[in-house]
Image 1 (spheres, rainbow, N blue to C red):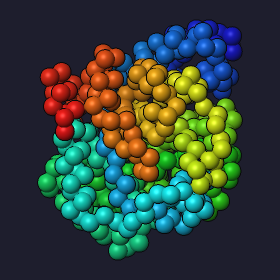
Image 2: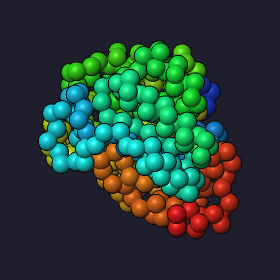
Image 3: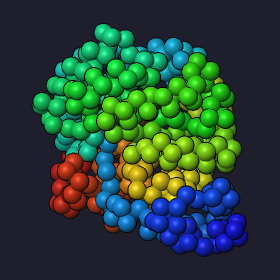
Image 4: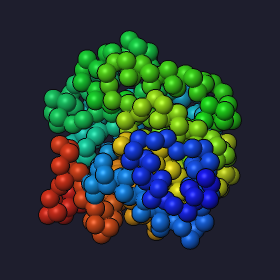
Length: 345
């Protein structure tokens, strides 16, 4: 089985398209394939991606609406209580600033406006302000909104649904077995419970992970399998940026080919899901960024939480030069002549 899976990538694509779950042995073969087969892997993953998404690329715009001062000890995060990273720290942005960011997202034709706040879980005061901001963005720009607010109860997710939040992000980040190595102030189960609460509220689920934190191949596979079991709709895959001042500042495990194999694995395991290349795209994929669009169908345009992203015009050129098209907010392919307009936004 291992030999077949390692050599016949189209067979894996066929199985994914048929709805079959990869065996663990086949999944390991994806992650450990030789560089000489990387293009074949990407071609097979693209067959699956194209079946569901054709050559469209979704754009998401990320706003760090509340930065730093987090009581959690997530070892990868520059905003955690144990981080000494030099980042900007501020409470929840005023509604006017959130609306300014939403206006920029609209100009860039982002399909989703992602509002993120730091912290374990929002206080009632902050939560009420978030609800008010969501309503204002909806009224002024009619954007799809993804809220990333930390651990959430059933009551909180119900209230988010009531004001029109389209999607809630809460990443699992890694496997259940490895979770205690990246955080001790909450558990993998706590994160799963939040995703389940989002599903119960009828909100679209967004959950992914961070690759390159010292985890094993089996941890990467377990993460993919857990996301499939939860039937998550949107899957952002981050690649660890070892930020100075965080416990993981010296971890350097990734190269572009490893990142591409991970993206292929997630496409085979999660064939119909939106897979987004998130934080660390520019740092770790580098000159091979366009190849990431063959298994993945979505990227962030603009900056991340505390690290800068690639210039928007460079992202758009990358998409166009590779023969892909931007997916408009309504899901249709955006006309080619719109590229220039978006790049100037």
